[in-house]
Image (tube, rainbow, N blue to C red):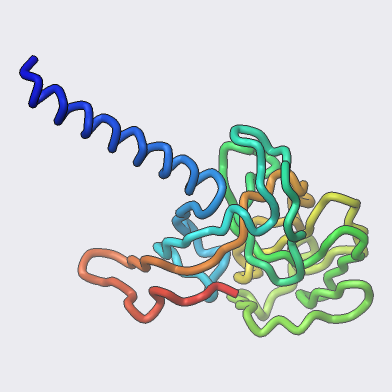
Length: 200
């Protein structure tokens, strides 16, 4: 190989390796992109919204594991989080934190109570307001164990969440929703007004 081409090839290869290492570092420890595939978080998040999620918000994890190496913050009330679905860890879900460890969560006719106090939830949407479902809209008091979180979608009548499959273990949480960087409804329909919007 021509020495000049050999030198050029080496430079490109080094640049590619550095770019891949940086991309891996950013995706693993800093931010990751996620797309909203369903309407469970309407109207807060629309189908087709693309989010950046802060991976470091709740601690730095050892790569390829769920073990937190450096704890930072714990998830708190009303945080919108991305997590591995407990029923199938290969699937990522996004929901809002309603109950943290030690809380008692109860639902009465769609109204959510935490530790006996009704939550103020201006972000919630109901699409079936005139109907009360025994399982979906009522839940006896449930105490949240240590290391687990109770989550719900903002679209309460159309969300598959902790009411049905239980709590989210701390180690399943991937990060906190940060900002919408793209919002796409379909061909020639970009939601420009949503881009850059904070999700909290």
